[in-house]
Amino acid sequence: MTHRPGRVLPVVTAPAAVLSSPAAAVDPRNPDIAQLAADLVATMRVSPGCVGLAAPQVGAGVQVFVLDITGHRKARSCHGLVVMANPRILDEGPAKPGREGCMSVPDLTGDVARATTITVAGTVPGTGEQRTVTADAFEARALQHELDHLDGLLFLDRVVGTHALHARKRYL
Amino acid sequence: MGELAVAVLGPDRPGVIAALTEVLLAEAGNLTDASMTILRGQFAMTLVVDVPVDVDRVEADLAPVADRLGLLVSVREVAPAVEQPERPQPYLVRVHGADRPGIVHRVAALLAARDVNITDLTTRLSGGLYILIAEVEIPDALDADELSAALTALAGDLGVHATLEPSSADLL
Ligand SMILES: [Zn+2]
Image (tube, rainbow over all chains, first blue to last red; front, side, top):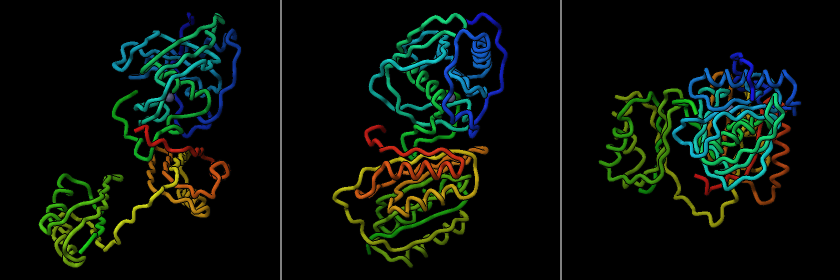
């Protein structure tokens, strides 16, 4: 895990190019990557309603994301704080639509079809330890949203129809 | 008399639809299809009404309501809808990126040049971010991959991002 203190970074919003470009794989043992992960956690923690953040959202085009859906009303599985570099999807179940938002698209939410169960494997920045997470419901949705960021995709690239965009009332 | 289309535009406020439909109901009108939205505070509605009186009569009936609520109202006869035995597979076009003049036109012109019909369209300007989502029908003779490649090339020109995907009707 990341023990170093994180700094709160400014969050980049669309149409920034970094949000629509695939992120690069990283060396998880690189101290800069561990620092970035800590910064992402700190930034997520101070942002109201923010349950996940990916490196491109703070302007870094690398494959690192953090997630913590603890206490969310739509959560079933909950792994607490998840911090991963170079994640990949091992398995996913059937998709279902649901509403989601993003700090990088601050004024809108969208209906997006996401797998209701997912298994993701990645490396913990700093320690280099391998981690596998099998999630469902809201945690599965949040994981796919963050992994999309690392592929240069926003929920705008996945909304299910012409009436699937909505003015945001609250954060994801 | 048959079916009339009524288009209405004006400042949004509670009671606009109630006032319009009161007039149509008084003429024994039966609403068939209607669509209403609010665009930057402007009420915009189109409806089709099956009504036993003519265009002039409905226009005259609606004039006092239009005056009172500051609405632009336009009425015209429509030919009865013809049921199409088989609709082509609907696709979804999604475009987002930095706002600039001509995004909608360039996308629409590209589609029109290939006989692709837009059946539903939403666009949003959110800060500097422009988003277009269109449901389209692709003629059987046209290859979706070719259309997708053309959209990607146009998106590159415009500095935006575009996706084309079959629209899954079972999702919402
Ligand atoms: Zn996001």
